[in-house]
Image (tube, rainbow, N blue to C red):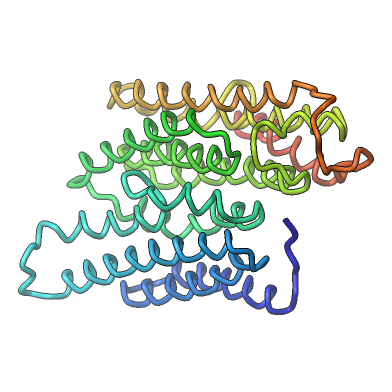
Length: 335
């Protein structure tokens, strides 16, 4: 699916970046809410870039979910200011639920896989990386000790739902959506230890892996796992690097994705052993559908009809980026 970088799109992208920076530098809840609303209105035209009915449907679902999250965020911020709040103990949980809804985190994840399966790979890349930056930052730095039990529940739900639901999917975009939900569980696990910077570190590693992977999938216009065998018709190098990226996302050593998971397990070992078990179980289920994708990559079906020209080759810069993010960062992290 094509993505035209018109002047209007460039203006929208600049507004998208600016609004996120405004949200990250906000000093009060009203300015934060206004910045995230601007971010929402900036992302809608990007979602509808191809003007297809499917992307229009995804845009509407995204708008409704984000509007509900904004309403809850505004309500909780007003309750903070009001000296006569009817439910003062519910202010923090409502605020957390509003951020979880904007983040696409379980149990407020109902919109995220549906939107991901309806939009282009370019939009999926932005939604899974940049659009998560502001809500995740709010969540990890807002966490207090009083919300430990809630965060523990959310982390476990993300890990399990991301694994269980991902195994039942055939659409690659839906698989990547549930994969993202599973990784959110690992990011939230650092919040139990009051380590917000470690959560952002995990998010940075995750983004460095999915961006080249999504770019490769976009270049080959892949939508389902059954189409993966046509990767053989491009280059063996592309096939190898896509497999390495997927294995790195699964967290297998000695690749990049293993390092933040190892740090999470080491830090949780003396504090919350049951959480480690839940996270590892969810990660094993994620590994199951990652391996299914890799098996599809390794399977060559000569009789499969495909619209992809056989002479198409992957750009060298994209291959270099894929290799660097999946393997090159690991020695740096270990140091």
